[in-house]
Length: 324
Image 1 (cartoon, helix red, strand yellow):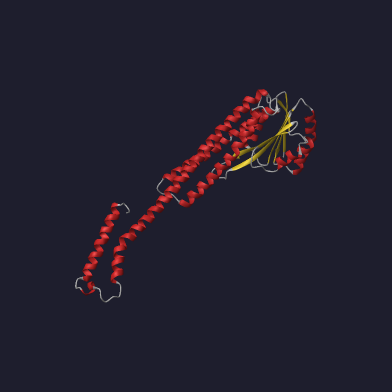
Image 2: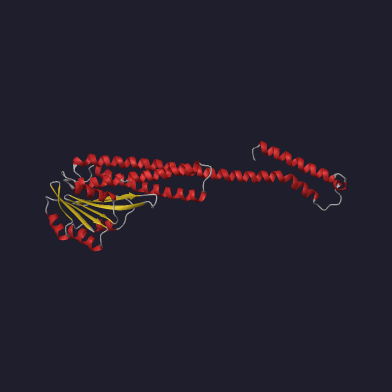
């Protein structure tokens, strides 16, 4: 689906134009155009990206093909960016949605295959704004990226809640091993995905904040630097949470090893306690006729007393060693 908004002197003058009308708007240098391709068809992609804006084939290929990492490419008269939005709730799996941006001198083109909260919020703000709106595509791009980064906050809050629950379970005396391991691995995967997204995305914004691109006006550089700093803080937070999760995993492994050691210690102690009885029984169980104790009238009592005494002594020794 093709959505479009046209601004003149910071005011919204039209929206959702036909493709042919978009060509005319692009030719008018006094207008600012934002085109949002929301899960477009192949025909819409061809008509807008190739027909109206005539983007480079490699940029269109990168846009259409899903990319796991953010990136930025400078072309002659526009800038191409790949960013990732995140959405997460405990009832659904952690997911990321790619948002591609083509930033020109008089236009901004966004492309995504799934609905995005940041894009929807941006449209609502522009529709409700009674004052002066954006006067440049770089301002539009910054606002959109700022909203995208702001939506990382609820995701981190959800993951922090799950991390704290895991830590409580790990430190508790009773926990289900299979469920805990599955939860640890799942949350670790979520943190790893988030780290893989945040760091490259910070590098992308850093290039814009340094003024490396001619598509970003000088007066907007402080805003992009602030956005870069927000991503840097997010990266530090995600790294800290990941380290806490690894510590919880190490504690779980140590507890599991300790429990296994206790079981082995108990079995070893049980074997040691029964060792005297096994030795005496094995000695007197031999089929030898010439064993003096067999012909003694009190041989049976002597054997029982010796077995019982050595068993008690062994039990007392192991008790002092705290093997029980």
